[in-house]
Structures are given as C-alpha cells and as structure tokens.
Amino acid sequence: MQRRTLLRGVLGATALGAAGGCASMTGTLIAPDSATVAAAEAARRRPGRSVVTARLRASASEIDLGGRTVATWAYDEQVPGPLLRARAGDLLRVAVDNRLPASTSVHWHGLALRNDMDGVPGVTQDPIDPSGSFTYEFTAPDPGTYFYHPHSGVQLDRGLYGVLVVDDPGEAAAYDDEWVVVLDDWIDGTGTTPDAVLDELLRSGGSMMGSMGGSHAASGGSDLIGHGGDVTHAAYLINGRTPEAPSAFLGRPGQRIRLRVVNAAADTAFRVALGQHELTVTHSDGFPVEPVATDAVLIGMGERYDVVVTLGDGVFPLVACAEGKGSAALAVVRTGGGEAPPATSQPRELTGRVLLGTDLLVAESVRLPKRTVDRRLDLRLGGSMMRYRWTINGRTFADSEPLQLRQGERVAVRIANATMMFHPMHLHGHTFALRDGGARKDTVTVRPMETLEVELDADNPGQWAAHCHNLYHAEAGMMTTLSYRA
Ligand code: C2O
Ligand code: CU
Image (cartoon, rainbow, N blue to C red; front, side, top):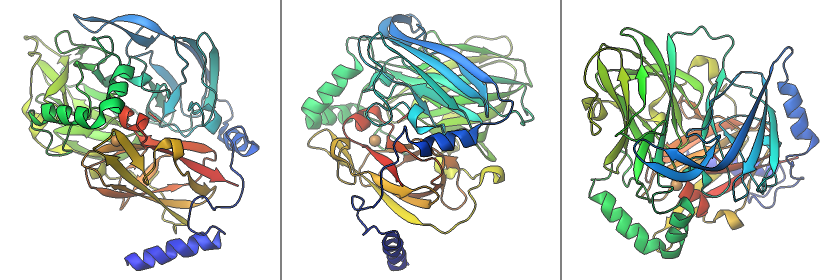
C-alpha cells in the first residue's frame, strides 16, 4: 500500500513534468498581483452584494485587562479589536492606519480570499510602514467565524487581534443569541514584550526551553498534547479580561446561545467548558460539522469552534484552561441570581468528554467531493532542542522550499509531526478536509509524533503561507509557502 502510494506520487509528478523535487517544477510562479488571482476574485463577485467598510487604527494603547493596566498595541485602543461583520459574498473594504512604531500588516485568518489581500509582508504585500495606511478589499466567500491579526513578527501576541464574523444569508438561525468568546495568553506590558521573549528564546534556546519545560512539568503537562508551550504568560484572558475581573455574559434560562470561540493566543491551547452545561459543537474554523455533544473542547491557536448551549438557571463559570500550563481564563455566564464563581473555578466538565478538531465529522453540505489525488505534498515538522529552531521539511522559513502545485489539482498533504510538541498548523487561503470524512479546517492541532493527512482543492491561486500558529515557532522558522505555478 505504501509502495503503491509512493509510486503514484512519483508518476503523478512525472506526468506534470516535475521530477519529484519541488524546486524543479516547471512554469512560472502565480504572483499575488497576477491576472490569474484577479480572475479568481472576479469569479467570487455576486450580483447585488453589499460593501462593508471599516477602518482599523493600530496604535500603542493603555489597556485595562481587569485590575491591571498594560501598555500594549491594539486596534482602536481595545482588546480584542472591533468586531467586523459581513454576509457571505459581501465585499469588505477595511482601511488600516498604522500608528504603531513598527511596520505592520493585517491577515484575514481562515478566509479563502484573493491572494493579494492576504496580508503577509514579503509574500503578498509590502509592509504597512509606521504612519502609513493600506486598504484591504476582498470578497468574503464563505460564512463562518474568522479573525484578523498582523502577520508581522510576534505582534499578534500584543493586543492586535479581532474577530470577523461572516453570516450566512441562507441560514435559519437555530439559536436565540450569539456570544463571541476570544481566548488569549497575555504577556505584553508585564515587564516584558513578545519581541523580548522571542529574542530571549532565540538567544538562549535550549536552556530557556529547559527551564520553561520544567515549570510546565510542575503543572503536569497535558495528557492530550504533552508540553503546554514555550512561554510562560502572565495572564490568560477571555475577551481581554482576567479571571479576577471577568467579562460577563447575560442571558435567560432556556435560551439557546451560539458561542463563537476563537483562540487568538500565541503559545497556548485552551480546554474550554461551561460549568453545568453540555456543549454542542456545530462549526469548526467557520465550516459546519456534524453536530456533536461534548463537555469540553480543546482549541489550538488559530482554531475556532462554534458551539451551541442551552442556558440553565444561575451563574456559571465559562473556563478556558491553558492546556498543560496549570492556569486558566474565565468569564461568567449569568441567567439568574447567585454569587459569581471564584476566579479559580474548575468545572468538572473540563475533565469529562474533551473533543479535538480531529474528532469532528464534516457536515454533508461542505464535504469535499471524492476525487483522485493529483499531487501529494509533505509537511514534516521538526525542531531542535539545542537551539530554538523549528522547521518544515528540515528548513526554516528563511531558506524554505515552497510546496508547489497547480490550479485545479486535488492535493493531499501529509503533515507529520516529528517533535514532542503540538503544532496547530495553519494554511492560508484554503479550508482543507481531514481524512475519512473529518472536518473542513484551516488550522489543525497536530499532536506530538502524530501524522495527519488532509486534502484540498487547489482553487485559490497565488502564494500562501503555511505555518505553525504557535507564533514563536513560526518566527523561529516553522513556516513555508504553498506556491501555485502556471
Ligand atoms: Cu492566523 Cu498565517 O495566520
Ligand atoms: Cu509549532
């Protein structure tokens, strides 16, 4: 079987005139500003669509996280940034004013948008210089829960992130209300910055990893993903608030609420549960799944889950445990009288049924049709414990070999994690399908030593980043590009 797969892969490559290796593929690179990309965008245009305009101002800001004020960088001086909302098929026109002391960019995480608006400096656009502006304009083709953040260094680990909800005009809402829940690990303005932490990791890699691993080991690590992360954050937040001064969601008993949960953290997977409630997962990374009941969900960095709950009567802790790190974020759900739950609440649901993205089954409506695979690509995830260096196929981003493909192909990607850390792997511009009827996703948490295979249709031409959504891993090399060739 393995041999047959291998042969098919080689034959496929030969038929296309490429002798196996990526570098040898013929044809020209499809640039973000090419006619091919413009044509793909034109095909998304729908008659009668609306234009949604917004303006985001990125600046240095003082933010109150709840009893603690930090100096950080934020959009419109709020954390999370403004909620953006459109309907599927709408044109978004978002002007970004950079008032930061550094160049920046905005990436629209999860959207199958036009390549030249994907917001990756050096790949799809020039950075937005300090005091400069850039207007992003693109069609949002698919409904779902998305988010936006810079694709510049570790800026996302400051307060620069916000949620983008794309509504489905055809959806009959099976819920009464909707709450957006954004998870984050916080470090900026607490005596250090993400840039300082990254520098320190890169400088003293091995020893730093050792000591940090030690502190996490004290918390027991995680039975699901092992080592929790590389950075010890000062606080964990839900919607920009610490457990000591949490955000509150108000509802009525019996209401059905759709929670849109987004993990905007840099280095932390969260295990999310609502005390005394069962969660029904309905969507993952924006796309519908076969609804499934669970007590808790594990959500890696960059992943989104939509879950529906039927509210009980009382006051309940909504807890996001920093997986393997021995700490948590908290919000309060209130539908009746009662005392607020303590900041350290640990509802028993956290240790009940815990669902991972790889457990989900796709909803029929978004199942990727069966098709013969035209091309097989490999993403081998590696790391070195001696230096702080994370790799894809043995290389860091600086000298990575792009994964090449052609428009129209069905592509299978094998993601093999050869490290003892988990990696939430994210692909820009596409929503792949997990094998055997698994969910459609754009970010998948790959556990230590796990191998996953995903399939996608190469239907969005351009140059697309593919990377680990642990920001520190990505900055230390764990990034490559998916490169369309003509
Ligand atoms: Cu949210 Cu390239 O990532
Ligand atoms: Cu990683």
